[in-house]
Image (cartoon, rainbow, N blue to C red; front, top):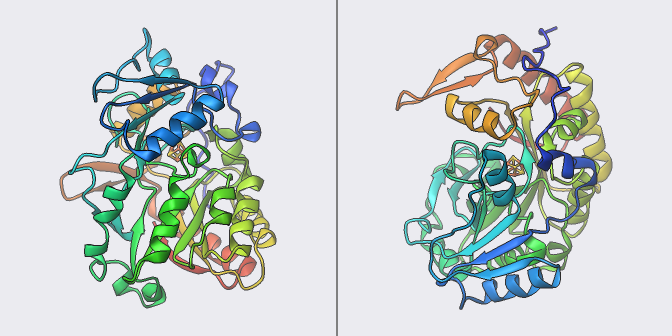
Length: 377
Ligand code: SF4
């Protein structure tokens, strides 16, 4: 039995940031931004017009900015800036460099972005330290220009071509590296549009995304052609309740996965970030059994198993956003991994990693024997 890594930070009774109290995971519904900012360049795009109409109908303040700089996010304190940014949707236009797809192993061949940022409040958020400035969600209105960049990359890529069990997916494109694309789907419909665009392509290419939201009605209605793998980011129930403010409850995500599988989508479990919480073996076995119960027979399901890690930079950002967090980010109980540029990230020690890997892989294949495990990291 591996030692349980206890949270090393104070466990409460300090008050959580007000945003977390306002949006407990168990009650979170679809995101409704308080404010929508639309830049000058975005204004003419149909997606921006649609978002403005839908957001106004839901009671949001819609502001047409005079220029292309996104302003008005900073508050007097860090907490106020966080609160303002997280409740704002900025509609803008992706620049040519932002539209350039990037390789993104091991998840997919290429990454492209429909948006950057996310309105949820996960205390381990993997975007912390990756995106600079206030944590606002920036939606790109020039969707057709973004998609036009992808077909020339069909047939290129380093991930799916090397893996026999993924070859039938063609070249894979990941849409959730810097955002959760289902979070704002009720306002945009852009993910369903992207799904249908992939279904129509003559090239051998497919879309994949992962989400912690559960509003799948636009996707259920979309003509997907089996070309989109909808993955749900899930975790042990205790982790989702404790650390994932503003997301859909775990059961809601599992039910959403079941609905999309019954609508014919290939689906997936993104189990992240895996943590050795107290009773972790039972907690993750319970997760996999609940996932199995939500899925129809013969579902096409994959799994990606990702352990918790942090960098010094991401930890600083997260402690600024969530000063009372009980999330363990203690270098002393971690192993260090260095990348080729000398950057450090902190992962669990090797023996614990091996133990968790063996236990979770066994529990997964016992609960859902047909699952194809794509990777453990
Ligand atoms: Fe970050 Fe994902 Fe949580 Fe959004 S849902 S706050 S992107 S971890």
